[in-house]
Image (tube, rainbow, N blue to C red):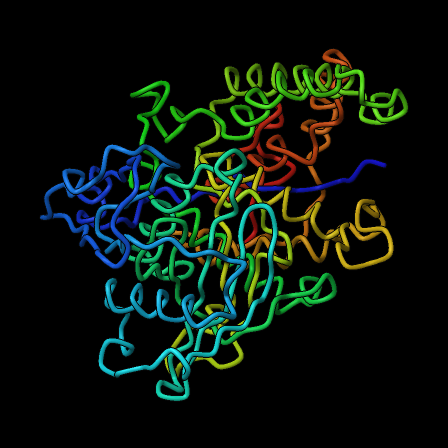
Length: 445
């Protein structure tokens, strides 16, 4: 089933990053190996010196440090979270990293309430509170023993710290310890598959996505653009392409193992996926050579309902759309804005808590009206704001050209991605794409 989708490449043309963020981006995080003396801690700030000299020579799993965050040299055993020893070690961490409000009170281990929220290969998550400090619940995250093979912890920590400290996006990280971190807790509820379909909630998500896309990629990425000086932010490698290429070879290796049943290989059909993926990337690069590359923006890349929180109470004077909090930035990377939007729309077709969580229902894909509602909120919160979308027929010249190129490349129809996306993104200037000169889709505002 194909969808007639307008997905604008509407990334902001003016970055909103303050100068301090560029300075802090050069602060890099550090990964050190070895074991530290339990109970000691190091303060990692922009003016601090390395504490690596205090490390012993015994090399164990790497410890992730981020400049600007305090670190406690303590390792927690997630299996012992009900024990008095765990509570005392956690209090040592809280005091070492100087969590706001908590350092002003004396809390005994028996007064600590530790509620386990979830546990998986990547994280064990707990809510931490105390009757002594009723207004400050914390989120404790203990990394899974093999999570470093699935997630780049240094990248994730750096991203979280920059987003929260510079842009007030996502949870604040109070500090780290040897195998985890302590984060800000939001009094909130996780959105459901039904929630993201509500017009007001969807508009709030669009507004928050626009704000995330305003983040300066250079403040978050450690590596420089793959093509410096490319202009319009297009020098950054497409994150989706980089990720797919990184796991294709391991996927081939795993599927070739004798223990993998033949029906699993047939169902996944990795060869067909790879053929279609390569065809799509060839089409995309050909399009960008002819029409100009889409500006890369900082994308979340996993805006499914489980990663979206709604605050139960909003502070007075706070914009209404800020009741939506985006979490879990493990997959964040530079991409065209349309990729993030299209991925979110496809998440509408999923229900991870239904009887068939692994099956996407195309009938749940957002309608034209629902997409327009999202786009308008996105455009309104771009920097600077762009004209909103009004009903218009999708340019037939664009559609014909896209179909012809897709057939020639034997690729899936590109309408979901950057073609019409860029077309809508150009509406504000009244210029079209695909050979129509904008005559049949000029903006009306």
